[in-house]
Amino acid sequence: MTVSPPPSTSPDPSSGRPVSPLLGRTGAVAASGPDAGVAWHYGDPTAEQRALAAGGAVVDQSHLGVVTVTGPDRLSWLHNITSQRLADLAPRTSTETLVLSPHGHVEHQAGVVDDGTTTWLLTETAPALAAWLDSMRFMLRVEVADVTDRWAAVGEPVDAEGAEGEPVTWRDPWPRTLPGGTRYAVADDEHPGSARAWRLVLVPRAELVDAVTAREAAGWRTAGTWATEALRVEAWRPRAATDVDHRTIPHELDWLRTAVHLEKGCYRGQETVARVHNLGRPPRRLVMLHLDGSGHLLPEPGAEVSAGGRPVGAVSTVARHHELGPVALALVKRNLDTSAELVVACDGGDVSAAQEVVVPGEGVSVDRPAPRAPVARGLAPRPSA
Image (cartoon, rainbow, N blue to C red; front, top):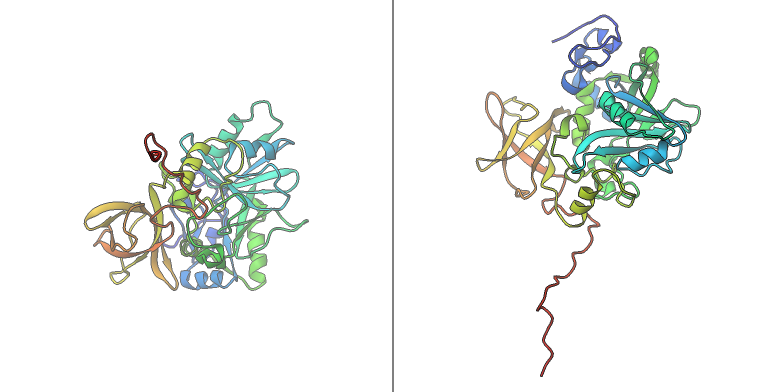
């Protein structure tokens, strides 16, 4: 359905987020779900996606939330309560962090960059994250604010940090294995996400249209979230709003690459992170699914994935890629055979799917400590007579 609402920044009643004025453009089709408030596409999603993949498109990401933390204790405080090492984060250096539950389940995710006086958190759960952070301030010299109504993000396929004097910019670190992190999937230079350049530039919300039109004047095309989601799936990049449920731990999504520092001090959920890394295996694993497109059917997020007639997982993100066709991310049982043929439930007829392994079935990271030899009474050899 094509919609042409008047330019506005008033909140969308269904999401509570601002509605982008770019939705007023002719041909703009509104996105839904976690992307409500911005355009799904502007009339030609395939061309938009190709332009973005080629490095020549700009994307309205003004539906994302922005939280600021100021005060002299801001970095050490965030370091102590989240999963990433932030105490010595240099200005204009991007990273990401997670807020975990006491049992290690993902509650919030944020892209993090500091400009020397303020730490900027880009997140999809701004009100809840800001409220939780505010509750954790105690007597520290920090101030937390949800500034989503004042700042908007513009996405662009550029692999560079923001320079001094430029707007605050968060460069997506995925899939580089950051210091203190580890990986379950392939090496950084072999990862399909290594070719995906992506960053978010923050502009005053009142200047959003100007920021987009300036990039269009330079020859870029404007693309919607259809394009960004398809390229994200291709890159195996997890997203909190779609690929996380109440049971998700970072290991299942290979998120220890960029969002967790395994050598830092205690934080909520650290015990689970360390235990699963050192001793256990994640109960589920992320896969990319190549869906049979012959029936022109696409499953919905949350659709059941089965193998041999047995449920083995669920789809989290579905996209239509300009080269790969219909694809999806799904969480499946870790012990599922990596060569098993899968079926995804879909209205109008189930869809067959081939899995592309992201997190290996054995569920062991590349630097998992070697298990200790078994120790028990009576195992020592008896002395010879």
